[in-house]
Image 1: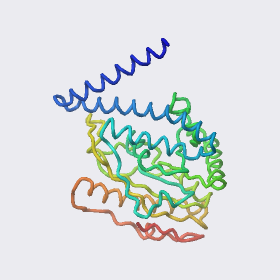
Image 2: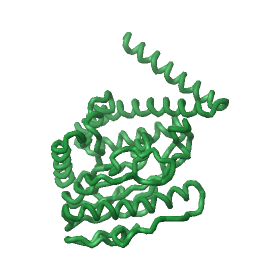
Image 3: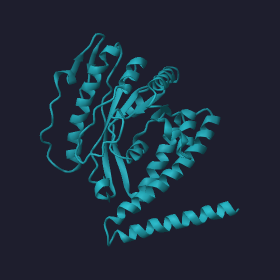
Image 4: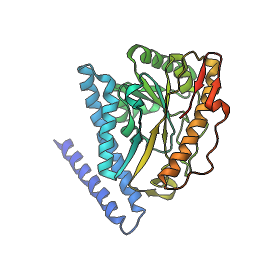
Length: 304
């Protein structure tokens, strides 16, 4: 009982502090950064705890594969309520529901991308994460229970084994994977992409499943950590057409990686300009390889 009382007092104080900073933001705008950060951490903790329980429950009834989807949606609604921020997903062809299994990839900007996953994450899909996250209370427990593919970036052998396990999971259970090919957050203020790592593309080729690019508009007008700015808002996300990998081999991965990055960068610039209400100018033209990359086994069609 004493522990529950302490938890109750802590939550009461935490919520009161968050509300205080929200009120203070009417006088000092940068206080909104602290308020939304506090609200985000609380929403993440609640969703992670919910994720632990829902993962156990869904496993018991034979639906463990949708645990991450269920937890993601809970985080979406908690964040909308607590911070006024959400991501609007444009998927006119319904690829999130229809394409399975697949390797979904997306640009990685800040910690807020967790909310983006909450808004667009498809059923029967898992994320990849660095191995150290397994030890984080609540979040690590949920990720382990719900089928996250943990990668040890300091040990390439372990990473290869984890990817091999992901290939088998995708083939046998028609389970998709979501990967950020940049490998780390970019924290950019303008629409750009860091160089892509090739792991996601090797995985797709080994499993012979399509790559589905997901492009998120640059949202530095909503969250800009260096400037202590964190506002409410709606951020557009666009799901691009699947890129087939049938017939491709490891020799084709370099071209596949380069052409996919070019396609996503072009769409990122267009999507960001539209989100900011500006005319689209100076969009980089994809090279001929970005339109159709000829490979030893097939043609990689990456038209939007």
